[in-house]
Length: 383
Image 1: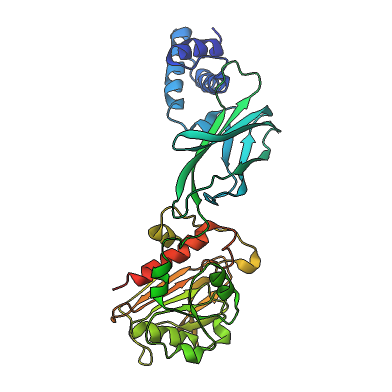
Image 2 (image 1 turned 180 degrees about the vertical axis):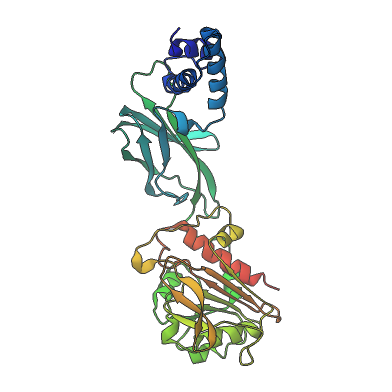
């Protein structure tokens, strides 16, 4: 009896009915043939041996990842990590599709809220063997009430033409979050109570916060910031540490005397690392560096990977030695930390340095706005 017939006859009762599982059957057949040719005992019953080998092979296959054995494996995945979108805006949902064999079929997508589909569509897909194609679906996100963040779901399924059973050959579900544009709609009085002083020589942070309705007092130079005794000190995004050499000392001393201090994505340069061993700088109670995981600690709904051009790249922090001093250096580079948290013994005394491009991505990504709100909330909650 041919090996393939034996495998098919044994596989059918357990749900591997050919020809739909032809890739699996072919794989098992190759196992059977290899074992059969390597073990030729004349006294054994060949048919019984084949059946035993087929059963063992099918059991082995059940333990292997489908992508390892499938003759026509399909990979469907999002083209990016973005799951945050502004409400009432036009966007696109992008996916990548790869098929080991030529594929002609269709992709169906749906967008749902509270298990109710509010948008759906279909498009033809044609893929050459082994080639990756991009699929993009247009989406108009729904209007949401100010102050409310909605959880939604996007579902995508790919179907091959000519399949008798309308089962997708690949599918993907993804949770999305829809944010209103104003992260402070219910926090105006609270914002005023923060009494923000902004040092922003670049000017871009001041422009963005003013349009967002965030109240602040603009500090014109580093020296004037050094005398602040109350409120919250914010250092504008892209402020180059190398151009303002006393800024590090100003931030550390402000936090040491009990002020919350937030430094947004600093520009190039370095500052002295606050350390208990230094005699000319106040000693912190704790110093911690983090990577992107801190974002989910602030808000689990927020994306941790924001795309920006080279100019708007994330500021990375590294520890270096500069002329015998241990410093924290900031640069636009692929490696390093993006979060520095320094705490002091004085109530509310805390310095946060965040390398994420919050201001640069303010209009492009809702996570930037809600991370800024979360950072202010965290500083305000420091005791």
